[in-house]
Amino acid sequence: MAADLYGDIEPSPKSSWQGYLPGLAIVAAGTLAAAFLSDHYGAPLTLMALLIGLALNFLSADTRLTPGLAFASRSLLRWGIVLVGVRITFGQIVALGPVALLCVLAIVALTIGAGILAARRFGFDTAFGTLAGGAVAICGASAAMALATTLGEKRTSQAQLTMVLVGISALSALAMVLYPIAAHALAMSDLKAGFMLGAAIHDVAQALGAGYSYSKDAGDIAAIVKLTRVALLAPVLAIVALFLRGDASRAKGPGIPWFVVGFFVLAGINSFGVIPAVTAKGAEQIAAGLLAAAVTATAIRSPLSQLLEAGPKPLFVILAATLVAFLLALGAALMFVG
Image (cartoon, rainbow, N blue to C red; front, side, top):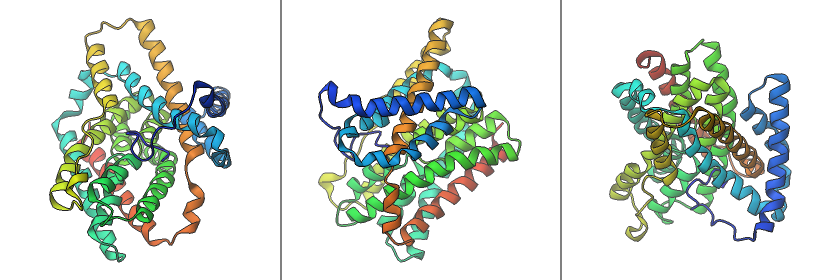
């Protein structure tokens, strides 16, 4: 639920504007604390937001905070993604080249395949492997829910879906911390690091957070690559619906989400140089704040306690797909990008 970009894991909580204030106040306080630490100690803003959010995770039990936390982790993230488009030009997108796009397609396909193979190895069926592998390969929790809806309840149980959501949440947060460290250790260029982070990390907020914690240019590339993966959800759902669907009436999945379209529209406008420098700088600062707030809220809402309540086998499947995605993204970045 922590990274429900499409709003289909749970309905948006209905509340008056006063109902959003408690949760948003907590998110604002955590984000401002992260900004203070980032400014005074030179630590990445999104990393500080993640750590402070995890420290405040116990607050997720307070239902009074739910509307504000849900709004921050979902709506603020969507608008933050759109505003990141002000930092991007089509020249950057074209600079990645067709080889990079083919690498992204291959990484998504092979990661899903790895999830299926690992699921069979640990005694699960193809449907669970598709669910776990697809969540890792595309966009984390939102992809998991969309895939579960397409597969149908006869093929994937609620318990399996919950385990995938919890595992994705935990591993995505861990990847946000560890992957930039690996990129620095390998002295990767901004282009290579941005591609690797955008192609390997599960959820959008963590992928962008890791990219911008590495450098501004790496964050821009990570945004392009990650949102390309998000756009692949629609064709993947169509393939799953064709071969594995459990209920034809549930087989329709989301198309390309509006925030991805908005991102590329703003990137297109920015490519013509018509956005004033002052406006672009302001939009960049707002986008950074919105993304940091979304990371804070996501960390607060992450159901980490549920990791202790289930056996390790489902997590092994998710971990196997995660390692494959990381190694493929790293290899592609080192060999084919830049």
